Length: 334
Image 1 (cartoon, helix red, strand yellow):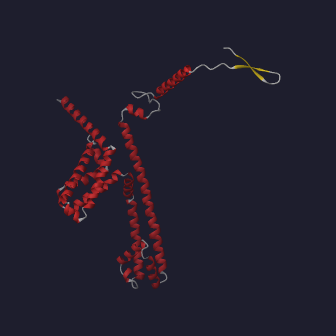
Image 2 (spheres, helix red, strand yellow):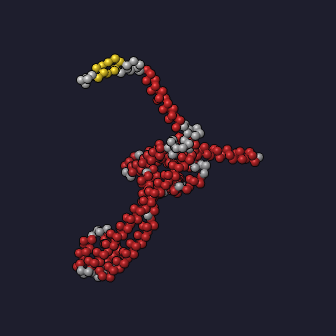
Image 3 (cartoon, helix red, strand yellow):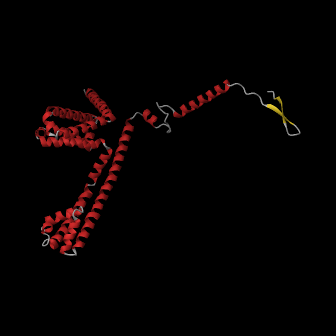
């Protein structure tokens, strides 16, 4: 009985390995990624068409059928991706993109989500974001945005502190004369937030100069710190995160290539490294021996061509006279 149970366990493991290999061949194929990407674009187009009331009223049934077809296609895709990890199911949940795709697809089958049209539309809209999985550059940007969040939070804290300090100063000096913009801390923060984008800066400076000529220093110092220093710091944080995201993408690509190469048979790996020492060992062809055979065949062909050519005539003898002329003599005999 233990031997039979072990045999059954090995059989199930072998079956899972074969299923994983087959599903992996499909999901890693170029046509599969292209087909899923086209499905995502088609889903986005259908969502856009449904915003027209006339089209929705006329083609309501057809649009429902198309939506069900999209949902079935995405569910099949998720089953194939999950099947690619049948040998080691835990690896499927280690990929954040797999988790995102799983939530977006499975949530459409939840009764509460299907009954709420607003939630269902948002879930369908989230499928469009899955296009980032198939666009490396867009994926890099999203990763960069995620990695820049800690620096962005620090920027927001510094910006909020700066806004509060300048808003309080503006309320103290400008509230009696300009209550529309500085009548309260909320109005002052809103005014300064708009000035951070340099919107209405000229009007604000002119209004401040009518109150006091020292208001010029207030606005100039705020614009220099908020619009130039802080914004440039934010740009630096984003650019740094973008470089880190590119390095992460390169490392992930290198890991995937290494994993694919490790799964190849030794003979295929030897053929893939032609010219390296020991490339001809095992089942792969010996490149050096093949090259020597080709050189020998070329030499034999040259010998055959040379033997087929007619013999060259022997050179003539020449006799020199005293006046310097040369006379043709008899031919040398061979």
